[in-house]
Length: 112
Image (cartoon, rainbow, N blue to C red):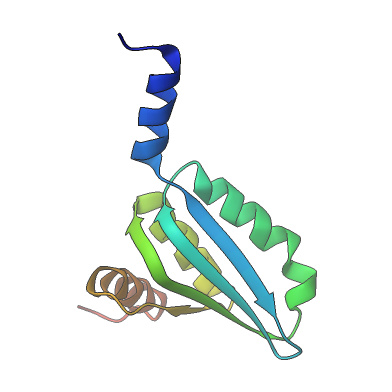
């Protein structure tokens, strides 16, 4: 028998989770993202980004994507916006590196 709770668990499993950790020093704000960069977590990422705008000020901002397992189109768009606002995107895996390379290529209008 399948109960209502099972459907919620299945939906959560499909959406996955996104953990956002922000570490601050005098010269840098480092964001570590872990999990799936998909809706509805994009809205949370954008909200956190907006709320921390004044604390970033002139500091370098790094967004570490090393532990991100999936990025959908809305996630790519959000990362592109962060990059345009000065965030340095760090990726080490083949998949995330490919996404970041595409964002950087579009940002600088370089041809493939």
